[in-house]
Image (tube, rainbow, N blue to C red; front, side):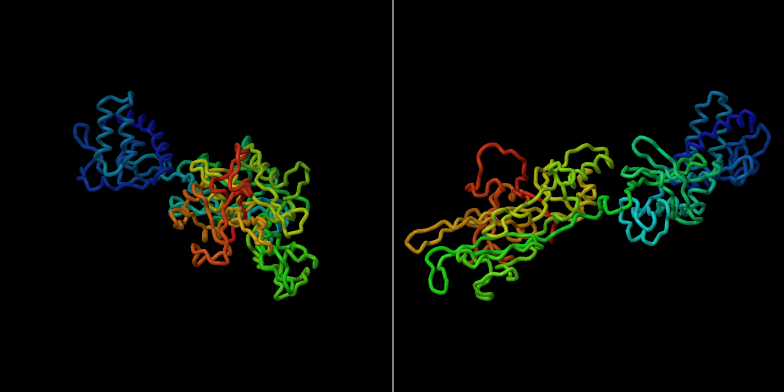
Length: 566
């Protein structure tokens, strides 16, 4: 071989090529290629200078020698180059100005005729982004959870005296199928190539500073623990496992840690908001002449609502015009234990106002839950936003009520900025389909799918007064949840009932018949009345208000979101 000394000097400069391709192996599998095998062999590589003979076995670029294999020896740990590495090596040779033309031709000829080309290094890189931390990680202190996650049951089985993070990982195929690696422990500790002394840390970033915490990984396992007692409470940290000892800096997937103080009875609870069913019942408004046995020929039905844990008071015995219980079953005298007339115990669900997060402890006129959401957006996502999602819903609970008691809390309805349509969030939004961090926070605070709440107004009814005249019956306003409304709603055109869709539910006037008949909802029975969906500000206003809107509402007239029952 010609000018071996100069070629050997050049081969040392090719060391960078191997390192470069070890980095490329982070993105694609580096597997030995046997595609160059099968070429005719020249019997003797080390012939005289006049002979035209090149390597047909394994050409080692490092020392410009020819051998049968690419072995690992003390001076040179080598691997069989891939086609991409070979191509890059040839390009490097062609561009090298320290070699003569004949020297370049000799190196390239040896590369081209060799059955395989050997480059420095094992060819195996520590895979990056191939370790995935499972979402069920927990941090525990004295049997209680220390972070926001579903950890109560797990932490009850531990006895950590200090905040200790427990986690596990899944492996990408480039780790799992690698005989030298195969688990998290080996990924952190196995020496690869010339990179020695590998070890891992838990790296945490708070948006400004980065810290490295010690991590413990049992041999041969995919689990880890780390003390996180040094991390601050109520601050979001982005964490990942990083191999730093050998300098590879390969990392796992990211995960978030948010420490919270131990619950001493005064700290906010982290379970989803409490839910309280709301019931609906009817009262019969009677008018006209009173006949024998206290009977009236004319009457109209009016609906009332109450929180299921707060039954309304009975009607006084001297009130003969409003009947709120079944007099045929329970007699004419009402009592606190008498069931309400046409009672629907779980007509809908609201959020329970007894949940301490709905209190106004800072006396700012808002339930604390709104500020809690606001603070979490700032601490976890660095977003400053004024939040006023939750508000009270008061409603008349019986005919003689002088004030309207609270039914519970409702959540503001949302409008899709792209379609302009109203919606109430569910798992799709909680899991990030909109890209809005508000829904990620609501996933933990609300936790359940929600549905729209609508208001409706009954068609006007007149009642004969028994003296040849008529009286207008009291208006009846009925709240109905989205899940039930969609089973019975319609709009009416050209003497036909049509079922609304996403578009017509906003562009048409929507009606339904009540009491509902979900089997045959579009035939009005003699006992049914027609109700029309109205925006709250349109109730009792002949179906429409005048002037400019002072608030933005979804076009389908939903006025709130509540926990879904369906």
